[in-house]
Each structure stands twice: as C-alpha cells, then as structure tokens.
Image (cartoon, rainbow, N blue to C red):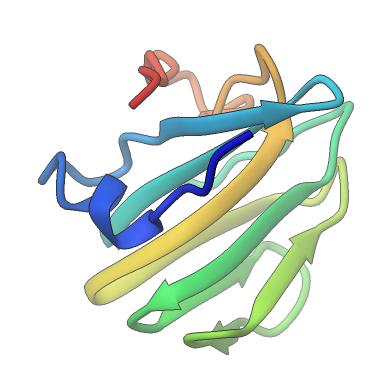
Length: 118
C-alpha cells in the first residue's frame, strides 16, 4: 500500500501515445500517457475506454457524433464499439483505465503499445 505520484511517473518518459502502467486493480491497468497529434480512428468491441485529462486539452472525434473537447479534471468514457480518435494540438497528459491485455490500438491495424510498468 503506497501512494503514486502521477506527475513523477509522467516525468519518466517523453514519448507520445505510449501508455505506461502505474498500478493495477480488479483486472484493470491504470496508466499514464502523453498525447500529441492524432491517434488513428479505432474501436474496442469488448470494453469501454476511460480517459481522464490531467494536463492540457484532448479532443475526441467520433465517426457519427460531434467531437468533444475536454481538459484538466474532466473525464470521458467512450462506449464499447464506438469508433473514436483522440487528438491533442499541444501535449496533453492523460490517465487511462482499461482491462489488462486490452490493445490500446483497438481495431486500427497498428501494433499495440507494450505498456511497460513504471
């Protein structure tokens, strides 16, 4: 039982779209990631996507709905099966929660990030 400093964990890497696991609970990974630019459109057939912005602004684009921009202290859940694309004009720092083993790339065709533990 210990506390986790998210700013400290985020200072350990500089890459974008590369989630790092900071802890796990109930079969879920809690991760920090830096966004900048656009991620490809994709979906997750079996799980919702959880995004909590820690710093910066993130825009979530959808294939069939208006885009939503959210900032520090705001979270967004993308329902399973919903095609989406996160993007950030400037670097954003984000907390993600998803089931262990879930590919962050969904069905985009990209290789999933390795999700190292830090």
